[in-house]
Image (tube, rainbow over all chains, first blue to last red; front, side, top):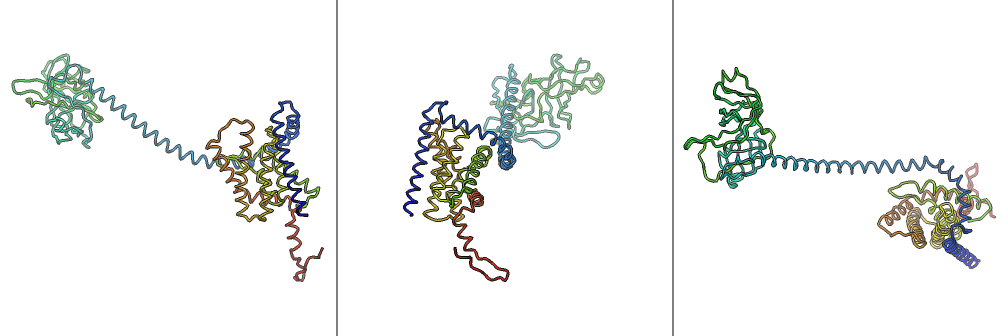
Length: 289
Length: 190
């Protein structure tokens, strides 16, 4: 009895395997118009309406499962996108910083072009690494010091104009006192009129400087440029070479000129937001004043 | 399995339903980047419940119907599913009815076997594809889904073919009949 069952089982199995292989072989050999393709088409056509109804009937179940998957997937994707946004933001910040720094260095180079750097002066590019936290912005710290050839009283130029002078050095850093410092005084000349005076800060307002001690009767108009005078009389001379742009006249009223011999100017250099400066190092100690 | 015209009708309805449902519903579900192969699990369940002959015939029939509905190479799915159904049935005939853990393992392993056989047939019949990492990953995920769904699918299939199962009939005969007085009465000897 058992043997008969086994024989029957094997026979059926062999029959089914043979049928499958035969179908595979015949289907593979015959063309699209063959009888097996015809049978397949008939079965497919008969079941098409059933499939259509089943598709609509089972759609809620399918959508429910897909909703779970999509929700699960969306959470993972959200985390991934958050990470990506953070990374891209970081990259963007770095790229913008680099671009800004490159622009600033280019502006610095442009400021010093045109022969305003005296012979024997060696400009050293330095990064601003520290800033006085007070509202007067009187000093900044740069990452170049005495080991780079920076000395006390070396002029410091920022992008677009004069920034200040070195007042203290360590081997690797230097303190730069800005032209907005209360003790700062720079001899300056108005171009093209040629009138000279002394640029002093309007303490508390880093965007306003005063040009004092002007000769009375000089015609001064708003918009005129003020540059360093760089005068030299015997051993006494300005520490700033002549021709470095300082700022632009913003207010020149005849009353103030008559009474106080003074006009107001705005510095070209953005002293509140500078990342790089050039220190005009003087290898051989020259007269300061 | 006790084969009667009624049970043949049920099996045909189950086979047709599961083949259509597999094509229009389960294949379109996205579960961890793959989809559940419920048709294969039904064949495994029929093999486990009815033996190798039932498994092989059911696998061949459902596979052949799927070949027709999918307009695939005729005999491809049929051969793969008949193999899986036969192996599931042989497991039951040699080792006995599987426990729950064994059912899950069997579901996973035989789903993987089915995926492998179908892939081999498809590659053998001219699909120009390489076995990439994605294909392997897909087969493994499908197999894990198969393991997870094996027990509920077996339970549903058992409900459908319950009246034809020899084990169920024996169990019913052994079940004591409780009278109103509470005394157990042995079932009549047939």
